[in-house]
Image 1: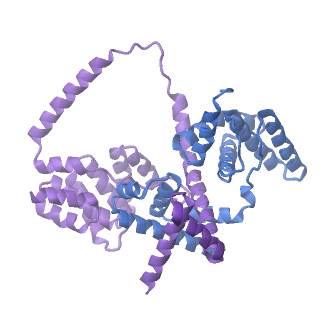
Image 2: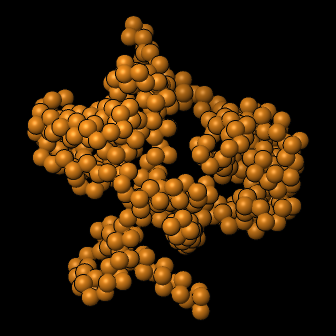
Image 3: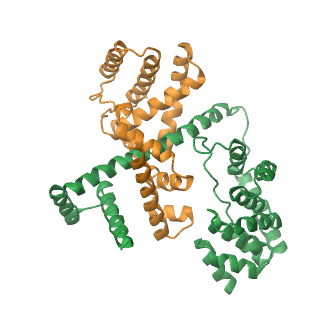
Length: 246
Length: 191
């Protein structure tokens, strides 16, 4: 019964949103507008939701402002020397193609099909927000900033330092796992991710199963890879599993 | 910059209304230096300049969203931003009534110089419901903040959102709904 109520509310919300963002048209629009005239409750809901959306947008923009501020400094510091002569573009293309070609060849010669499958699908977790207003853990955030910039070694160094104080912390273990995976340390990654897996109510449980699946895949541990990929809800997991079945 | 094609101007306001990332970023970064300069010259610090500027920026953006803005001129938008920030600074130094009339006069001057038709600057400070919504949003978990800002601020479609979150569209839709419910509860609790 509760579920039904939720579904109705959810459907009403969707309808209201279509009305507010202008995607509702013609007959449906007309009848909705008529409905608004006769139903004060609905009219109130629409107004409130409109205000809620504006509030969410404002809060989101506020979160962005610090980023605009920080990147501003970087852009002002970029000095483009005008006197530098640029080598001919086509040489860059040729060089790049050659390197890619050789690189691909090398890649195929030295990796297993599992590893190639891993490379095809692996993308590190986007990471957590690094604005300080909600998370006061400064040390954690510092490392997260490195992580988000792709400086996994630096992030790992810092997070590893914090580990003795927070051995059970699933967030820490999770990101250490993903970071290690990002730089090719599957064994380490597995160690950290398995720790997270022990915490049955962890927020990162679903993600952990996915990345464990990928870690085992890269390690050529097919059975364990499949086991983990089956539990996770990531869409990529299904794609990988179907390729493994072939 | 003074004589830009009117269509471009209209597009600029429209882009701001649609939260176009590049437009907002450029607007922010172009106008900051002049305001920092003003505040530093008027006994302020860099930190204070940033805070005042961000408040002013938000105020301008909300005014545009609430349709209190029919400027056809980019210079006008920049001028507004400068004026709002300047007056916020003045206001913060002198919390008395006379400064408010000075603010209004100043704005009217900007208007007559720049051919702006309507100056209904939205008083964010007085909108307690908005303040409440914003602070409740900040209390949400990172996951919900991400979902809600991607959908409502960045205007991503449900398909795009699902892809970015690595969920099915149905799960993403459900997650969004649950986050809205969370937000509503937080707001209710604070009232």
